[in-house]
Image (cartoon, rainbow, N blue to C red; front, side, top):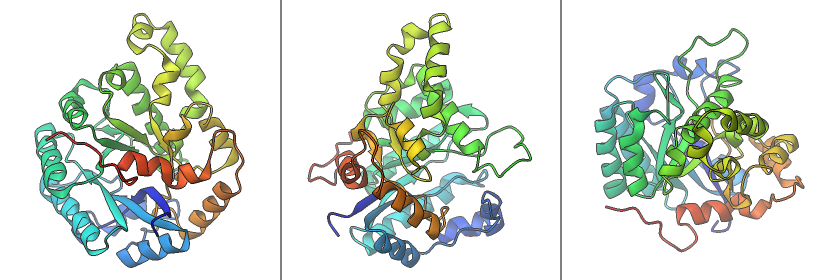
Length: 316
C-alpha cells in the first residue's frame, strides 16, 4: 500500500512493558477503565481497514518505570524487531529514560546509530519539569545536532488530578499546551531549530489559546524579544490529528499551523476502533481552508520521515 496513509500517532505495548507496568495501570488512564488491547495483528488489521500503510509506533505515557534504561531499551529493540518482521508497515519513535539525561543520551546514540529509528517520543513533563526547563537542554542539544524528530506526547501531570475525568480527557490537552508554551517562552524552540517537534492531539488547547498566550508574552518584560514572532513560533510545530478530527478543532488548528505541518494520527489502541472509524470519516468529509486530505494523510509525513524517496539526515 505505497500510497496509503502514514499514521504518526500509533502506540504499541511490547510484552516487556506490559509485564513491568501491568494492565491495571494502563486501564487507569482510559475513560472506560479498560486496558487497550494490542498485538501486531490487531494493529495491521486496523490499518488495513482504514487505508493506513504504515504506523509510527511508540510506547504511550505511563507511570515511572523501574530501571527505565533497561526496560525502554527492550521496548526500542522490540519495535525494531517488529519493523523487521513486517517490512514497510511500522516505523518507530523510540522511548528515552527521562528525566535521566545521561542514560537518555546513550539511548539516542543507540537508537539512531543502530536501530535507525524515526525519532523519539518525549513526554510533556517529567516530575513537573516541562520541556523548556534547563534540565533538558543537553538532550535537546543532541537531538538538534542529529536533526531528528521529537514526538511530544502528554503525560500525567505532577499535580493531583481533579475528580472530574481521567487525565487523558482534560489534563493531557492542557499538559501539551503547557510544554509547548514552555518551549517557546524559554527560547528553546528558537534555539533548537533542527528539531522537528510534533505536538499530539492537534496541540491540545493551543489553537484556542494562541491569542491569549501571544498577548501575555507581549506583556512580560524581556520575553517578547526572546521569543520574536509568536505566531511563527506556533507555526513551527508539527501537529497530528489524533482524537481531534472535528471541524471546530481543525478549523482552529489551521489558523495557527502551516498546511505542510499537519499529520495524520489515530492514537491506536488508546482510541477504540469505532472512534478511529468516526474520526476518519470526519477527516474524509471535511472542507477546511488549508486542509488538504492527501497531504495530511501521507505527503507531509512522508517528507518529514524520509518516505518520499529522500533520506532524512541524522548526524553521527
